Image (spheres, rainbow, N blue to C red):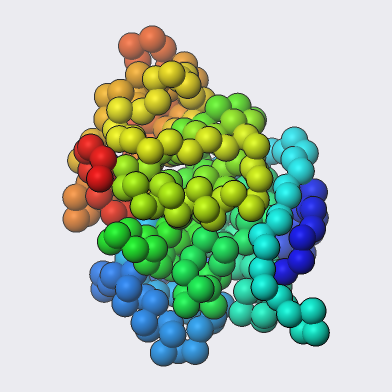
Amino acid sequence: MTDKHRTFPLPLSSVVDKAQKKQTVFSPVATPQTATQNAARNAALGGTHPGVRVGAAPGTAVRPGSAPTAMPSRSHTYAMERAQAAPAAAPRQNPLVSDAVRRAMVARVARQGVKDPVVLGALEAVPRHLFMDEALASQAYIDASLPIGHHQTISQPYIVARMIEVMRNGGQLKRVLEIGTGCGYQAAVLSCLAQEVFSIERIKPLHELAKANLRPLRLANLRLHYGDGMLGLPQAAPFDGIILAAAGLEVPQALLEQLAIGGRLVAPVGARAQHLELVTRLGKAEWTSQTLEDCHFVPLRPGTV
Ligand code: SAH
């Protein structure tokens, strides 16, 4: 890929139009698998396979649900400057990681029920394969979570989009906090649609990996922090949106306190059986919560390593 600048949001006609004609909802996945098995199975199937839906590895939806309505976005300039060793004599894109394959991924996410064009546009703008190990890059656009090392995963595109859509609720996001940066993919997507994004990771090598992955993208509105996300980021609070990319038995109190009044937090909650929970702060000491679809995430853990 050459250095180029893209304006966000991207034209979505091809994605959204197609997506809204046919609303396919995928059925629940019965067999839990690990993300590593996802990777192995899809490698055996021959890499990218838009029709393939693999099992409930961490960072996946178990049962996609409905989605709220969408609103227009503000404009955002998205600089994509990943330096790649593309030989001058071979300018053609690798078809397994091409823009067309990414568009197909977005169309699939739309068919699964994500309707917000701003979220779909952000998903289309961020090259997911740049956040993965080269050996897995050809699987970057399948609908699965995949391993990123340290027993963690990059979340499934559908669940990334769904959580952001629920948090955004068609509104403008000013300040957003993500718990669990991992490889940095969701943070990059968030930075396309929020004014300011903060993301915390507790595993040092993953924090460093995310920094390295994100540096070439030069997302000036994104700040990465190494620390225990269960404590939040009081120095940057309040947040009008908070997303957890790891599941706890409950939503940490510190995060509830750091939500702005009117703000929305989306988190996977549970141990083996997990669901997405939407918490809205109604007042100084008043929160309301709503249970959404089932999901499967890696565990939220205290402290740093
Ligand atoms: N957001 C990532 C998903 C990463 S997986 C993506 O874009 O795909 C979830 C991450 O949450 C893991 O990297 C894990 O180390 C991290 N995590 C778990 N508990 C945490 C905590 N208390 N604070 C910060 N990060 C945490």
